[in-house]
Amino acid sequence: MSTIAELTVPADEFALRRTLERLESLVVDVERVVAYDPDHLMPFVWLAGNEAEIAVLDDELHRDPSVESVTLLTDLGDERLYRMEWVDDVTVLLHVLTEEEATVLQATGEHSQWRLRILFPERDALSRTYEFATDQGFSLDIQRIHELDDDRYGRHGLTDAQHETLVRALERGYYEIPRHADMEELAADLGISHQALSERLRRAHKRLVEDAIELGPRE
Image 1 (cartoon, rainbow, N blue to C red):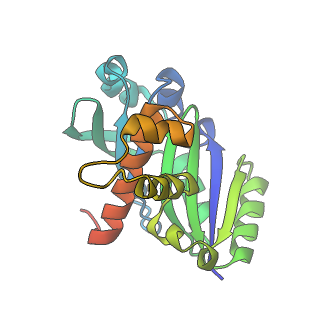
Image 2: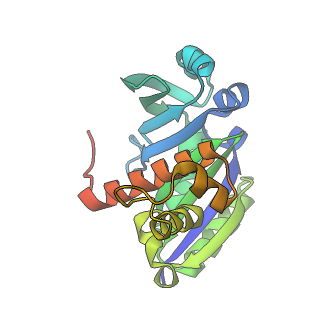
Image 3: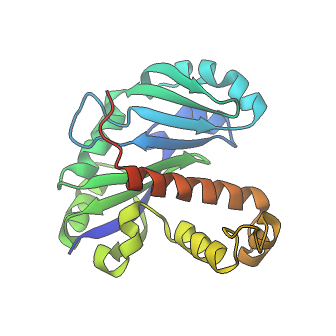
């Protein structure tokens, strides 16, 4: 049975280690993870932060030792889309994680760590990958494991928190016209801040839209 695992790995063992350390509120979201092409691993990366961090972002990325090359593709003010090529130690970890025909569904970096959501063809493949990665010296931490058939919404790339938020928003009438509940009410109901709710909904909506329109490979 296919298994989805959510793993964390320190940024200093993976990508954008210097940038995440220096820009503390920066959030990194990989647009697409290509598992089997060594020349195009995690090529498209969104970075969002406050005004001060965005102002120095280009300089920080060019100084980051994990980045081989970087090209700005889109500038939306508070977030930017880059195309990146990585140094060898970043691609090595990705190859380790996808060696068992696994697929990285989601990769997000913030607060000096990365959270990876990976689909494995079977539970044993996850066990072998974890053992091999730790033997190679990588500090993987398994946060959550669930079988795909037991968590059908997982096929859309949603986290548990994102799924819970969408369900609560639907139940409270957030999507009705006019709305029966606003962002403040929904955030209070979930016990999170307005900003956290906004970011969670935005990421969840992005995952659902990508799944619905079936984005193809990008050049």
